Structure formats: C-alpha cells, structure tokens
Length: 270
Ligand SMILES: NC(=O)c1ccc[n+]([C@@H]2O[C@H](COP(=O)([O-])OP(=O)(O)OC[C@H]3O[C@@H](n4cnc5c(N)ncnc54)[C@H](OP(=O)(O)O)[C@@H]3O)[C@@H](O)[C@H]2O)c1
Image (tube, rainbow, N blue to C red):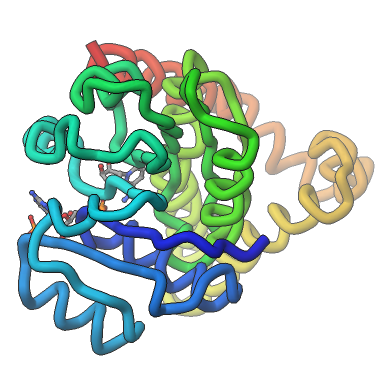
C-alpha cells in the first residue's frame, strides 16, 4: 500500500532510519513526504544526505499539518517530547509510537485529546528489512490508520496486529528474541570451533542454518516439530544431538527466558 500522507519521524535514530530505508526501498512513500527531527545535527545531515528526506529544526515543526507522526525517541525521553507537543498535535494526525513500555493511554493523556494512536513493538532485524513488529491500535485509531501503520512496518519485515495487553508478551518473544537467537548462533559456532572448524566458517554455517530453518518454518507453514522429524533418522546423529538438548532442558530454558523478559517488561511499564 502506498502512503500519500506526510510522515514525520520524531527521533532519527536506528529504528527511524530502518523504517525510512525500508519504506523508500519498498516504494511505500516518496522522500519528499518524509520529515525527520532529531537533537543531533549530525544525524539529520546523514539522513538528508543518504535518503533525500526533509529535516526539521525541531519537533514542533512536525505538527503543522495532519499526517502521520512516528515517535522514535527512547522511552525515557518520550514524556518530555509529548509534553513539548501537547495539545497542539492535530486530532487528525495519526500517532505511531515504537517506544518500549509507553502505553497508549499515557500518550493520549499527554496529548490531551481524542488522538488516534497506534503502539508498535518492532525488533532490530528491521535494520536489515527482516523485522517482526506487533501493532496495537488505540480506541480512536481507524481501520485506515491501522492499514497505514501496517504498510510502514511491512516494508521492514512482518507486521501483526495484537491487543495492547499482549505487548509485554510480544516484547519478551520477538522484541528480546533476537538476543536469544544471537546467543544460540554463537553457541552453535563455539561448538563448531571446538569440533575443529575455523571461527569464521563456524559462524557462517551457524547463522545460515538458523536463517534456513526459519525460512523453512515460514515458507512451508509446517509445524517445526514435523520439520524436525523429517531430519531425524532412526539411530542417527540428529536424535543424539536432540537428546543432549533435552538433557539440558533446552526448551524449558527458552520458555523461561521469554517468561522472564515478559515479566520484566510488565515491571518496567508500571
Ligand atoms: N532498537 C530496537 O530494537 C527497538 C525495539 C523495539 C522498540 N524500540 C524503540 O524504538 C525507539 C528508538 O530506538 P532506537 O534504537 O532507534 O534509539 P536511538 O538510535 O537512540 O534513536 C533515538 C534518537 O532520538 C534522538 N533524540 C533524543 N532526544 C530527542 C528529542 N528530544 N527530540 C528528538 N530526537 C531526540 C536521539 O539523539 P541522541 O542519540 O543524540 O540522544 C537519537 O538519534 C525507542 O523508544 C525504543 O524503545 C527499539
């Protein structure tokens, strides 16, 4: 879906850049419709030079006309930015926030009107256009708003819609998930080094194996248990490896990790 509104990013850091890059690559929007503000002049110069987008002198310049405002500052800066914008934000402006732990009601309250808000939890693979994002619409957001937000986040990966109460679970799974997978890739490669492979080769094989297995789950739509059974021959090498994983409580450990991150997300959101 092409977006014909203007989009302003408040905060031009890593996530904002990933979204800008993805939308331009996907042809979701043209550079003349993208605006960005940031406290770093260096950052703004980089974004203008790289993507040909419009840079703003301050956050308030972004609220001139109804369109889409994407809040991409760190959660601890969010209150300051929202207070700065306050009730001057037009009620026809769609507000999209990617700040972890900042609730829709906190944003609505800070803006002080019946604003249309969509809260999103993206993840870092968005930087390589392979992100997983969950979108939760606020009570005033329309179907068209949700479609626009989906167009933005689909341009940097996959975008699903959830109720806001599930955002902590999403944070524990796909928000923190890349860190678990990086650890798995590293461990797999360490084992390869121990077995005699060079570090470079071990990492290449390990990362590609994770990518390939993930692609198989997504592209075949098969249950991962079925895909695992397909490569597990009787008395073979894979079942010996799987037995070792079960002895080390591999699955319970992964479930504990997601549970712990979900609980931590709940605590931080209070
Ligand atoms: N990265 C992730 O994986 C991820 C995942 C889920 C959610 N998020 C959320 O995405 C948001 C952005 O994360 P990020 O990784 O892109 O962070 P980031 O790279 O630090 O980007 C934030 C940018 O905002 C700028 N900034 C600070 N104060 C500002 C202000 N008052 N007005 C305008 N700009 C200001 C920062 O400048 P300075 O650097 O000079 O302070 C920085 O360039 C966060 O709220 C985070 O919770 C990120």
